[in-house]
Length: 198
Image (tube, rainbow, N blue to C red; front, side, top):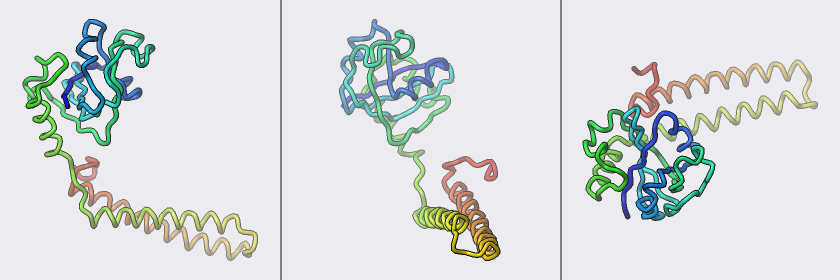
């Protein structure tokens, strides 16, 4: 397995993510063609000094996987996938080698980035995660009951209104609990960076 650093700028970053495709110029085609399926790739925005990753190469590097991408300017391409992405701002301060590597990172450099990814990847406290999942399920179920009653033809209209009002109260209460659990989860993990927890 090898490690690769592809680059983008503010103009090309969005297309990299939309297509899940990284590319480079024809001049570097021989290097890009050494990328193999399963290799680890990172994306470095030169304008913002931001590093994204890790991504996994889901194709080998080759020419014109998507010929129309970036208006044809970067035909040496590799398709990528990912499960979760870490974002490093001021990345060249954290990884001094970033600005000096053209495409292929050494094994030590790749592992250094992965080590930092693991260090910042938040873990969800199991009890809070289960509470959030339970509340989400209850909210969905209550909303479904409201819709069923609303479309029911077997209930008296007044009974319908009373039952809908009761269920709405239940729904609002569960939604309030849900919001507080989400805030608590964020307070412990900083995974959402909610303004209310700053």
